[in-house]
Length: 389
Image (cartoon, rainbow, N blue to C red; front, side):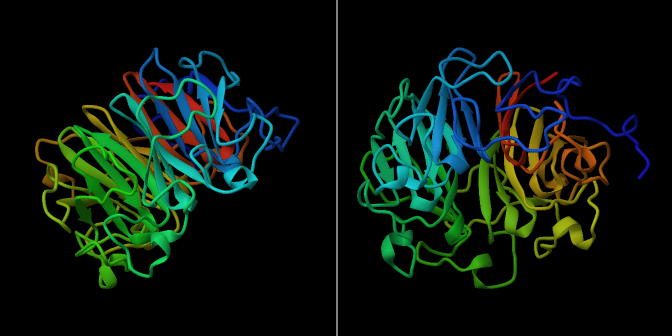
């Protein structure tokens, strides 16, 4: 395929690529890097949380079932972590530290975000969300609260029931905190749960649900045809100015509400990645992507002007600019990309090459912190800290 890199608009990221790469860099003569846990090595990280330029940074090292923490924003490649939560030390791994669930263990941690002075983590395969009231600044600081379960040792999906409830979770992958509200993508129940205030008790019930007609239902696409209110595999959440945004990876689309929904099952205003609300095919039914198509988009983040979407199965980032009216975004083409040479390319690391400072391989998570885009480049077992230009 002929390169059109000089003609394809690029996202407002530094053209030199990531300023800092965390994880072990692949040397040209080595095709495989170790995935055994160390202070440096990660395995399929899916989430990253930087509080500010001077506060600690935490990463969900998903495949090693742990969090890795840095005292400050890392400034050099492969900088080792300072702290670990979820394992007895930096050289151990295993679901729930090869024991039973507790206040410092994980089973596939994914989404991670700051919440006021604290930290929230989606502990996906324990079917729970862990909450720290203060951002941890040491290894194995115990969580203060658990959501989705009655206590820290329980870990059955939907607390062992066939139906969902306002206080249960099933494969929860994403978390987001905005203006006092906590949002959780309860992925296995095909819904987003919203707490109007940060919960204060273990297992506290959510106040609002999106994606389902009530708190008990859990069928994909609400048991019917995909619509503006249904979900199949919701994964990540952000706000773009005042508008709620949710990635619906299973329907290969991004859902955007005009403002903050106030009623259960409220429909979104527009979708990206599909032309209509009932369309769901990967890359709109063709093999190669284009500027308006998506394939399993998992991550999303925003600054004031741009919406960044991690188009995961296409190994690229896409960007949309804020329009005058959010309604004009229905099925709209993205304005820029990163990770690929043009909108029609989809190969990991740009045609299946070795990782570079500006290539991607199944990027799962993205967060924007000031002028830094922090990207969980899961397929390359690394985190990219990429300056916004």
